[in-house]
Amino acid sequence: MAHSSGKYADFEGLRERAVALRRAGYSLRQIRDELKVYNKGTLQRLVEGEPPPEWTKRPRAKDELRERARELRRQGWTYNQIQAELGCSKSSVSLWVRDLPSSQPRDRPDMTAARQGVRRAAAARAAAQEELRDAAYTDIGPLSPRELFLVGVGLYWSEGAKAKPGAHRRVIFVNSDPNMIKLFLRWLDLLDVEPHRRRFSVNIHESADISKAEAFWADQVGITVGDLLKTSLKRHNPKTNRTNTGEGYHGCLRVAVLQSAELHRRIEGWWYGIVGAAPATDLENRA
Image (cartoon, rainbow, N blue to C red; front, side):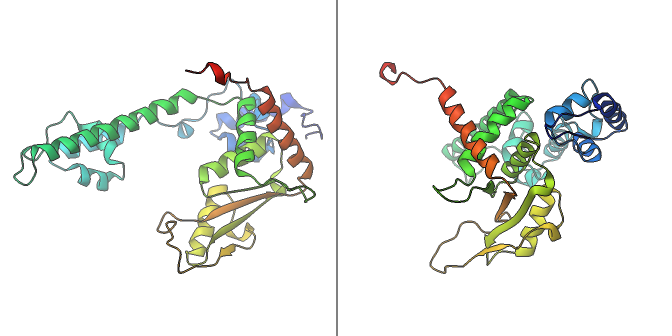
């Protein structure tokens, strides 16, 4: 269907199929897998003008959660109880119900006015910080293919493997943040790096729950545990006070791209192209 240059011969025919799938309720990822179109820019052009199905739309606000929190607050629930019931942050609860009266006396005998003031100030700061983060989220909006391309170059050059002089070059990306991994994979899609060239493996401390970590990462990238390469274990040092423990610790996922020496050199060139294109700052005239 696609030539080596990445251009599609029967674009209109492909578009008809993509539009039909879109109207049938398919997501972009499902259309991509069905039509084997891994270039995000091409995929977006195929469904241009067709609205996404309702089930894929991100809610504009947590309306149902907010209304439930307000209902519980009217019933006399505390912030901690609402947080535990709904599984959201306490700062969100505070933001949603702060206009409702408290179910407890404001002047408890065991709490001074100063302590109450400190708590109220801390809650206000937390709510303001979450509101600021949510506002910043909406500042970004959709990324164009070029914007995603530039972000991916910077992401790889800061977190990906670099080759030492004379060493074999290979594109390898390791990270513990699932969002970083997913963004890197979307970048590979944009570069037309086929899924069959990608290899995944888990790097984790030997004292962790290995099976749980493997299942976690396989689910994050849409493969089976059997598709993972052998997990790399880090030896336990009893003298080290580890902080990467608990339910949220899943180790790191290593993503390696086969036959990627040429791509690695191009990434290096792209990065220095970005550095060269960035405007110089006049440090002498800074206040």
